Image 1 (spheres, rainbow, N blue to C red):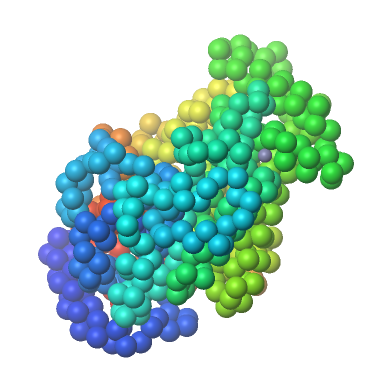
Image 2 (image 1 turned 90 degrees about the horizontal axis):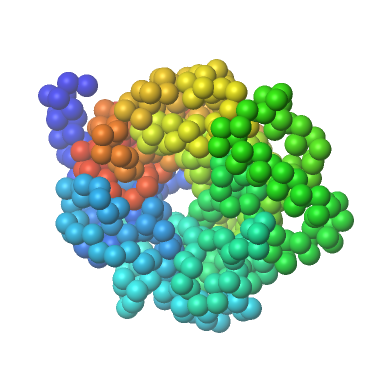
Length: 488
Ligand SMILES: [Zn+2]
């Protein structure tokens, strides 16, 4: 789009949305209307003012739903811009030290046998406010829906956190909560109930980003979880031999490490990797067992939500790994998730995908994929297996991915959800930080990503990751698509 046209449509958009504001105030988003959600945290509302931010979100991008960051110990969705990256053209121009946690008042009656004290999880940034209480009435007055948006990261300095942590192959604590740990289950269920019973929310969304032992072994991450609860669950099921699982993962880990040091396996990297898998099929069983733990957690939260309000939508974030890792994608069959899923926010971050894909290839290539060059692994394996085609290995960090990637991923997700009740809401990249010399988002690129998603028939999008890192021009780029499609 020419700059002139862009300005014209941006101005037209402002006029339209200002005219429609009063209508939106009267009528909550009707069923069947496309959802334009945005991820946003407490800092933005506290720094810039609730009404002002809501005005701006409606004007720039026709936003009609908030994914309000109610709980996060990570600054991917909570907090201001990441330190070292340019602060966008709104909000406070400073980088305070981030702590994070729960941004709502905690009502202890909903928590029982949680191992940790939920009061210890309160975000110290805003000790006296409840972000749902602060934002919800103003949002509802405008017909904007509010979804709780919680990311279950943990902090190592949380008192008694060792009671809920995953444990790796060597017995070390991992910076993740274990989904097979009853304390952790109770904690997440208590928090879900607290949000629902204490506030008039419109939906419950959880972000749970984690991987199993095989995936992590191949990318040199922590090989977990071998906590007492996981071992006990596995023993009760009586299917997996734990000693053989440990042995197999040790062998795989040694293989990976030797490859990284330059050892050339006699029969090649990929053949040797498969030899280990066939000698120790327990590795695959253990991977599936880990993902079943996550699925069980989803099922428990879903059941809790529906027991409180059968009409309350409940859903999950499918992380960017689904773009890079065939193992992760294999464990995320959309159709299979229907009994415990109403909404899937499927990450399709087009711009940072270039940098992240290059990083993924760099990380996994030395071991099981060591027969390939980075370029071949990307062009001949990755793009073919994952079914999209973008630029060469050396280019993608500097170009990002195209709207065609969003289009293909949105179509895949829609095909996967066909015949189910699951609503696919792609996550759209607006200024997710990348390295200084790498590609960054543009208004036209953001517009095209949103257009691609809606052209694939999705019922909604989630502008991501957080308003506090978005430039207003790029948010307006998403708005251009929304206005072009007559959705705002
Ligand atoms: Zn465990």
